[in-house]
Amino acid sequence: MVDAAAGPPLFVLEEYRQVDGCALPEAVAHQLRRAAGTALSVQRSDRPSEWTLKAGSVVGTISVPGARVLIKPKVDAANLFHLLGVSSTIVTRLDASFSYARQPDLVESLGALFAEMVEQALAKGIVRRYVQVSDDLQTIRGRVSIQGQVRRGGLPLPVTCTFDEHTADIGLNRIVKAAVVALAPLTSSARIRARLATLAGRLEEVGPLRPKDLAEEVAFTRLDRHMEAVERLGRLILDGSSLRDDVGGVGASVFLVDMNRLFEEFIEERLRAELRHQLEVTGQRRVGLDDERRVGMRPDLVFSKARLPVFVGDAKYKLTTSGLGRDRDYYQLLAYCTSLGLDEGVLVYCRDDGDVPPTVVKVRNVDVQLHARAITLAGTPAEVDAEVRRLATWVLERVQARGSSSSVPAA
Image (cartoon, rainbow, N blue to C red; front, side):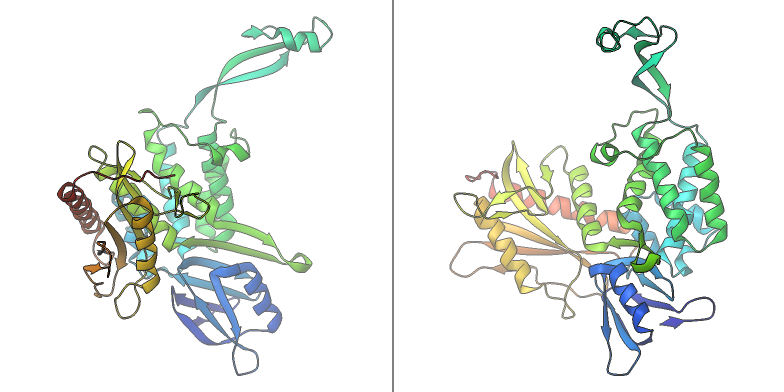
């Protein structure tokens, strides 16, 4: 679908779909291709100055001077936000003032949602923590650093002191502020940009993002647990958004979310929570295919007891049009089972069109069964959670039925 009512041409398509006959100057098409990377295929059509845009599993917004592309997720907006870890209560309240369900641009929806979440979180006050600081002062504060004074040649002033400061300039707030700042230029809504600018001002005392902030996991307490969903969404915004300077100083703005990765992480987190008292659930755990472990593999789901693998699974976001899993999905799962010494495994598919994969494939000449289970994202968030709970119960029943013995530990 093409919308050119105002501003540069707007091309709207769904994930795994394509739009033909897109009228674009060649220079703009090349800028779009560079900005999108592998997220969007931009191919010349048979007609001059027309191009075919084809999306995969990545959704979001790609904007360059002269064109804007919106890739819409197939799943309902409420379920998309649910996969992102956003409370359904927040989504419901937000819909009263912002119609995300009818908004084709994911960035606009996400901008309104993130602004709402940050505003609610800051209404409880900005989070502060004690941080150890070392500084040169004119008066003594905290503990005097002898090593610092020695480096200064023994001069009496200033005094190198180490002390604890109750500050808002912490990793948690830096992630949130950086996400607010990154999201503002990506949205075309003046109202949302103004809300985000106001929030950035309220976080003025928070410094810029540091490399270690995203590398380290935030340890939440009961005093700042209300920031957990905000921090998680902030990380995703920083991971998916970018402002790029193209050739000749031409700017491109991009926000993209990989639905494959999002679905995998959602299934892993929810199964871990459901099975936390019965099984350990690990995602992307490295296992070796060969005895020397030179050929490595990373299953999406390894279920263990006392660190010993007892079941394995892989999450797949998309079914083929026939409803059957791709052949290579089964080959991959069979390799996981063989490597871990297991006789059963499961493919967890996302389904939104009513197609159902085969329930079980019994592999010829070996005693291995490859199951397939589908999670439907066409219902409500509560229904999605209920399906995940049923999946967790089923996995536990399979493990209990076959016993918990396994002779091949993971690498």
